[in-house]
Image (tube, rainbow, N blue to C red; front, side):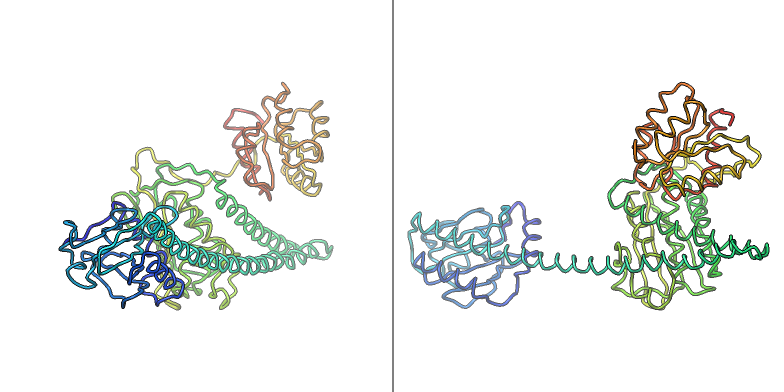
Length: 545
């Protein structure tokens, strides 16, 4: 006799296995149900059977010893196909079943009534059946009782599964809380650590007897540690944007070697610090669909991670394997490697592995989390592989392959000419230190600057002055930056003015452009980059600063 299958067999089997009920010991709750079923239908035997890929497996048996039955010899398999209930008053006189193995052989079924064990969303897992060795009639009440008891068995299953999932969720929540607390403690340490050299450098600069070399040293200390703190803040903001789906990518065909070269530039400091040997084997003719800003950051995070966890003088190899529709970029290092349990955990937010305790690499551990999520936004994947601790690591970034036609080449923005004409700049920010500091920078660069700490002050200033550039915060106390720029855009004499939003809210870029800003830069703004951007933009637009 051939086995028969319901139409939704694949989904049915998936759901059955999700309950974890197969091949488990007897349980009193299920035994009570089969006992009640036998009593309700006045039969000597009642069974709870589950049907998997090849067999009928008995969870509970009343009136006989449970035994496995081949699926093709199972009456309960026919009940599953029937979809609700199968009743056979006298199998010996039923043309469909009189030659069935369970009728002519053990357990010598004559009367059979089976109700499907159907989940709350309609998936059949098995049956609750009552069996007798003599013919039976069945009343409507008895059918209803069998269905009710079958439903009780399913409720028991689903309740246990829900309890298990709740327990697992609580475990994950507790782990997330621990990871968060560890992360916050680490964040406090990472942000506090640069403050000591920054404070010392400031004191050195304040000493009249400090020599020029000492002042130069102090300035380098300030630049290095402020840049480090800025990188932490940038990673936090970027991770938040990606996690909330607020980061939009612009995918276009890009030469893969250009992405790698840009990533090497971004990770140059980390590579130089460890004096690592870097090799790059990337076919110049390969292209991928990528965002020219965010994709190099993915590769840069992989390079920085490799540099961090590879001892000084170690090897870092970048290579690419191309398929018909995908390209796989691999970053392999000779570093401390990864334990098998850490291969996925390293990508979790607020989670660092124990390898961090062996050394003091610094950093917040956000890079790999951000890199994987950016890879997924690209429609690609990022996975880790390692033979174990001490055996190095390999990270593989997979992207969609693209045709080279009209593919742009990534280049660093050329330095703006320091001899460019001076600009008149209005800085609007309610944080006086921030406003005064950026105004001072532009003033030292030869530009004319004015400062407003409130939107009303900015409106008063432009009433009798036409700035080339307005740099405005968004969160102002009297009028937000969006309303301010909309108001300023209505003034005829500011039609040629460039408006830039500078704000701590990194996901304000779309709203800023819609309000009327020409560009958006998150805090802390790099004043040098901002100046070069302004000079290039105004030159490109044909405006004479």
